[in-house]
Amino acid sequence: MTTHPTTAFTGTDATAVVTRLRETFRTGRTRPLDWRRTQLKRLRTLLTENADAIADALYADLRKSRAEVDTMEIGGTLREIDGCLEHLNTWLAPQSVAVPAHLPQGTTARTEWEPLGVALVISAWNYPVNLLLVPVAGALAAGNAVVIKPAEYAAATSALLAVLLARYLDPDATAVVEGGVEETTLLLAQRFDHIFYTGNGTVGRVVMAAAAAHLTPVTLELGGKSPVFVDHDADLHVTSERLVAAKFTNAGQTCVAPDYVLTDPHTAQALEATLTSAVNKRFGHDPRACEDYGRIVDERHFDRLTALLAAGRTVIGGQTERADCYIAPTVLADVSPSAPVMQEEIFGPVLPILTVSGLDEAIAFVNDRDRPLALYAFTNNDTTRRRLAEETSSGALVFGWPMQQLGVPELPFGGVGGSGMGAYHGRFSVETFSHRKPVLDVSAA
Ligand code: NAD
Image (cartoon, rainbow, N blue to C red):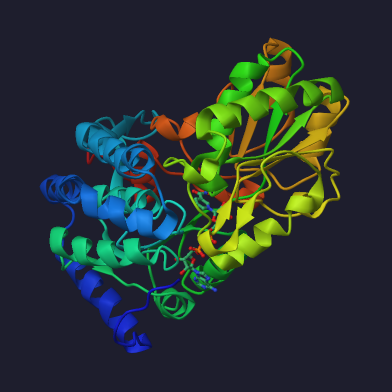
């Protein structure tokens, strides 16, 4: 289901929104640290005062459990805001650099972070609070005005956030535009100073092409197939519990969800039992009745995903209910690299296991494909860790627990190659929405 503004949004409206925000930016109002901190605090209050309403909207859109809302959506966003509030002064401090001897004595050189101007943030529907508000927090912390475009497929959340953001944030420096392709296209025709897009690579190309017309820099937070290498020496009980927790959160609709498993035939066989018990332990024997298990966002994605279920032998799961957009946590074995499930990002609760002869073949398998947003591995072997680090490329490399990189704000979050460009979280959010300006002051002496 998609939301659209109640009155038609036109190209004139898009121009007016950006012009208004640019005028505010030019007054210098968004630059002082006080203003930035006030906006961050208001964003914080928005989340804490309206946690119940946000949880209800996320339940309506994706049947997200309250625990998931509190940890991933609200908690994850608060953690980023709090980090910004605590460290912003330090992050923004000018940095002096050495001056070469040929310049007159007394010359100083430094870098300063300056805001870019008017940013556009376009969010995806799978974590429609976090993926919208974390970049918005970065844009505000960096001193920008920002146009905010929530994800239309998370309709209830989009509608709620539109009301709340207008109520809590500075209305002269922020604007929410709801809607879908039409409205986003009108926005993309405008000149922004930065565009931050989260979503799929096809639209990422549309965004980048539109940005090129104005030489606007872009951050593209895209997806792809994030592999998991399970080494023969891994503890398969721990591996399976962590793999199941990561894969089936939000019913697999997570950009950094483990997409498929690569392992040797012997380990693959052993994993069938441990993954089965991990699924049963986490979601019970009827995951449909489990409060912590989500639903597929809409019938289009449900149909896409159910068509992938025949790609292998079902180890566990496979049950579906279209009326409820329910697909059970599913593990498939004996999956061929040429199977449909291996041709696109799964973005749902289906985990294929593919066999390789060992590490060499796993590395070759990964390198033969688009560079993933994350590469995960379970291994106790330091040489294996080093080889994966040196011989593969991915947005992030994580050993031992998929998706935990999200909870470490000191780590930049972003893709490489087909999984995107640019990064955010922590200080990287602020840097993304800033220009690092060199200031050279040559002494008159
Ligand atoms: P989506 O359908 O919500 O689209 C994202 C945004 O793009 C929306 O705001 C939508 O209005 C806009 N959009 C759609 N078509 C457009 C067009 N033709 N022109 C202009 N704007 C358009 O989300 P999605 O793409 O289905 O999201 C899923 C994808 O996003 C997956 O590939 C997933 O891995 C990726 N993703 C990446 C991250 C990340 O942080 N790297 C996070 C979440 C999702």
